[in-house]
Length: 243
Ligand SMILES: NC(=O)c1ccc[n+]([C@@H]2O[C@H](COP(=O)([O-])OP(=O)(O)OC[C@H]3O[C@@H](n4cnc5c(N)ncnc54)[C@H](OP(=O)(O)O)[C@@H]3O)[C@@H](O)[C@H]2O)c1
Image 1 (spheres, helix red, strand yellow):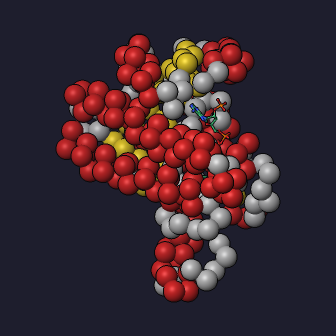
Image 2 (image 1 turned 90 degrees about the vertical axis):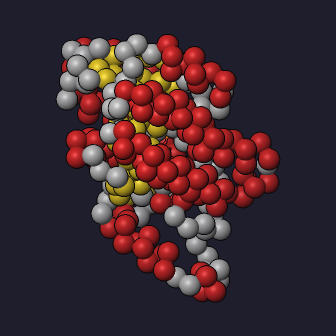
């Protein structure tokens, strides 16, 4: 039975990913800061799908704990999905240094810290899939979201480099760009219905991406074109826009 590790398993996307892979008979390793929160999901998945599901304590910003965390996993996962992330209102974030650092460390430093460890293991075994959930917010900095966006831009660049490095080892690395998704992270926002995906759509895209060893996935196809247009706007025009 193949095993998938979900880092940030209390998230709405993490739960959807866990359910979909459990349905497809994967063993599931759920990891999050608060393991108590994972107990109902663990028992639901184990009973409903008759698969092995374990829970693990993981804090993305406790960098020193990442190596012992990964060393303790048994078996080692065949697929590692980095779902955790943090987004707060940009004005609040820039006014508060702790919030700035939390945004950068959760979305960038934490992902790099844990994935370097996973990548080393997969490179030595010459197999494995690494899934990173980044964001279209990382494709061009906008005044409304540039701290979160810049951390995601760093993560996207990291995943690109990792994919480039691990290709010859036969290790698969996919960058997932969900666009807007209805989750706890965005529940206070008034998202445009037509442009917004559900957590289940993200889970299905990830499952397909792993099966087909895709490189970069936009959960809703039109986000590729929206971002293409946004990136083409000349800087003298872009800086005057309130985006
Ligand atoms: N929703 C969107 O529109 C959207 C769009 C593009 C990309 N994304 C990205 O998609 C991913 C999933 O987000 P979501 O929308 O499903 O949000 P969510 O439901 O708010 O989930 C965020 C997750 O991150 C975890 N987390 C935060 N800080 C952590 C830390 N220090 N260590 C470990 N886990 C931590 C949270 O765990 P706790 O339960 O412990 O708080 C929670 O599981 C994120 O990377 C997000 O940036 C979201």
